[in-house]
Image (cartoon, rainbow, N blue to C red):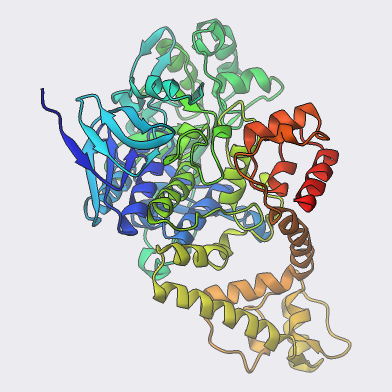
Length: 623
């Protein structure tokens, strides 16, 4: 029997959010790339929530964009409502979130892939990886076709041996009834890859015509829309936005859930997988937060060309009859009609401790992994891993240095460092609290932090890189200028300050001191600044933030210097730590398992004490 046999530079397995970013990165770097998907119609599908961004996740999207990724560009084309979250708080936690038209988002991303030079899309299930010793040489599909390659990226999402459950109904499919990938897990286990079982869930979709929105609170988008991508012209995306709605569960809802817990596969023992702590099902919420009288529910449209509404905050795996009963206790949903049942999905994924910070498997040279298959949750976390895995697969094929972002320069660095150095026993979710240096890692300055890396690897154009360099220069010059502008205590100034509820001046002061006042800002003070240049809005925003938070920023930069000192002390790869006799046994075991790349990374491994770090430092000095 004859089988298809082809050769590519890189194979991408899976075409979800991680796979799309990985494939585009490799193809845009000139490598012949093929991306496999169980269904071409599922490219960049959004099987759960209909939005991109959110708290900390918006930071990830901005960082993907700064590296040359596509997620931010794509949501700017397809959003139907946009809002900057946490505006009442400091800029460190401001985070953009946009409701997407699900169908349009997937369609646009598919077109981007289809029109990308050097990229081939193939609808096929990959069933095996092929190796020569510890080196990947290709992949094989269920049809027997062999695709030789120099590197591959696994972006299998929630499809590996997946099954969907609600009540006693179990279907062995991927999300939305799509085909599961039932063969690849066995091949990976045969090659020594450790697999674990996780689960996640999704709420019911409700027919819009059966909802009474008068009983809910309307949630509007921002008056002035801020784009995700630094390349999107803000004026080009100002448009009429759809409404979302807020409602709540109540004690009646909770009583119905409690009375039927024994019928939930979560509590009956049918589900083996571990679910996400920070995105629990409604059953989990009712049990874990028994004192709460109600829980928020956001009712969000799935798109402009469908009447399906997503009930955010009420994912469940309870039986169909219980779902009808509990949803209909919610104000506005008394007569609701369910279009799609809520369900849980269970799937195989990998222990990310098996990966280097490059997202390459330690056991198989040339095999990388990105996305939810690494034990994370969320579209944004997946896409962030996908672009890094794709870049590093490409760098390896091209014989160039890998890209490793650290915790002090990006949320992506925090995400990957947490995955590869910490023992995660549940789906990982990004949060602003996980970033130690979050005042430096704001969503507004992602381009200033990361564009140089995108340019270095070849995903950012010369023109875009030059603009970021100019922007940095203009920010520095403007801060220097306003630091020397003296504002006198004259009548014009006093009237201005009074008008803006600010304390009058006793004597002249610098413009920078006025900008630091909480009630004032750089743009507001324009009438007092006669020499003010006409600067780009992005430059003005940075000038204002850097002046207002100068003391805090300076303090964090000092902390980063110490962090960098330890990160720059590199440890040998594939090293046998049993050779260092003064290390405790637990530390040797953990260091041998994780194979940290630096003293800094070693210090973040649970079970490695400060005393062990001192021993490692002495060892490095002797070497």
